[in-house]
Every structure is written in structure tokens, then in C-alpha cells.
Amino acid sequence: MSSQCSDQNRFQFAKSSAVDDIVLLNASMTDFTYGKHAHEEFSIGVTLRGRQDFFAVGQFHKSHPGSVIILNPDDAHDGESGGDKALEYKMLYVKPEQLTPALSALGMPHPEHFRVKNTVSQQDTLRDQVLRLASLIESDGTTSSEYESGLFELAEQLVPMQEQSVLQPASRMHRLLNNAKEYLQDNYTKEVALDELCQVACLSKFHFLRSFKDYTGMTPHQYWLNIRINRARQALKSGIPVSNVANTFGFNDLSHFNRRFKPVFGMTPYQYQRLILSP
Image 1 (cartoon, helix red, strand yellow):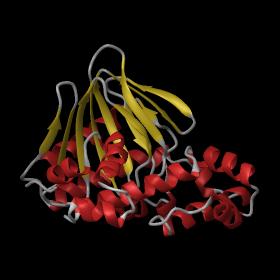
Image 2 (spheres, rainbow, N blue to C red):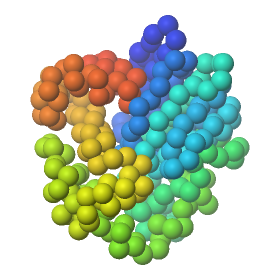
Image 3 (cartoon, rainbow, N blue to C red):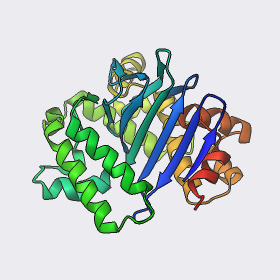
């Protein structure tokens, strides 16, 4: 477990010694503001102190102490401390494929498409399970079976919160916009022209821009940049030197990489890599 601190903001990471993929963030902040971004994982956290104010899924939210925040993969959001007290929270980042086996065992149809409906929940049992899983990650003695049991019990709490609309056939517009999203995901190493995206989506320029932002919460450029930052973060976790990551993912230089990365993770790429790879 390691941390990156300033006088008013602290970001501390922990990884499971039994299962390396899941990451826990312990954060305390007063004057830091997250820029708009989205994660490839489920982000599931508990507000411990203060208030977290954020915009996500087309709405403004306030998370008070004891509240649980659940963000699906690709849910665009920002975030900051609200009120006068410092914000403290724990956040789990769980890859969709880590939840899929548990959701399937629980009888969930199409578990690979699972999404949670409510962004903020007051359920005590869900809060307690998130905190229990966080404590398992922070414990050096946790076994893989304990971890898998904790993840299964978390999935049990999430199943009743499923967003039903994902089980319905996608509209033609959503299929077209998904084509554009997939095209950006496949071509994230180069800047894709807007005209090119419009051709992929079979939409006029201004119709596409408006519809894409309504659907994803981000402009096409923001979405493309977010993909690059997330892929760069995975490369940092694998130990690739920061300068090589910046070059591989198309950032002009380290300064440019720093400016794009810090508003999303609260620290520079070098600081993030040093912390996430520390024993």
C-alpha cells in the first residue's frame, strides 16, 4: 500500500495480495477536482466523511457519509469535495470480467452486459460488503478463496440493482453510436477525424456530435482521449517506462501526458506507476 499526498489531498492505493487485478483507492481531498472521465471498470465506493459532489449519467449527485457510489464502465463523471469538511472515501475498481462468473452463477442473463441502475445507494448491506471487500484487499493474509467469496457476495448485492434497459434490443441510433465508440476504441493511437466518425455512424456532423455526447456524456474527442488515458494507465501498471508509455499512446511529451493524466487520477503518471507497483 502506498500513497501520494499533498497538504490537502491524499490518494492511497492498495492491491489484493491474492488477486492482483482489483485496485482499492483510499482518498482524502479538499481542493482537488476530477476532470470529466470514465473508467473501464466498475467503480464502487463508500463516502466515509464529508460530501462528494459529482455529475454522472446526466445528473448531479451528492454522496453523504455512508452512501455508496456505483459507476458502470464508461459512465462519464467528474467529482469534488462538497461542503466545508474534507472528503474521505474508499473506491473499488473491479473489471467487468471479474464480476461476470459470479453474475452468471447467480442466474443473471447476459452477465457481460450487466449495468447498475442507481448511481448512489443508501443500502446498508451493500455499503458493508464494499467495506468488507476493501478490508480483505488491505489485509496481507487474505487468501484467494476469501477474496473470491467477497467478490461473489458483492455481486449478490448488485444483482437487484440491475438496469433493465440493457436487456432490451438496442435502438438503431444506439447501434450507430456504438459503431463510432468501437471505431474510436480500435483506433485510439491516432486522432480520428470527425468526418471519418460521421461516416462510420452514418450521421450528419452536428446530429452526430449532439447524439454522441447525449449517449456517452463526452464529446468524441473527450471519449478518444479517455480511451488513451485508460490504456496508458494499464501500460503503467505493467511496468513500461513512463516516457515509453507517453510516446506509445501519442502524447506530445511528458508534460502533455502529465496534464492529461493528473486530473483523472490525482497524480502524475510517474507517481501513479511508482505507487501501484510498490510492494
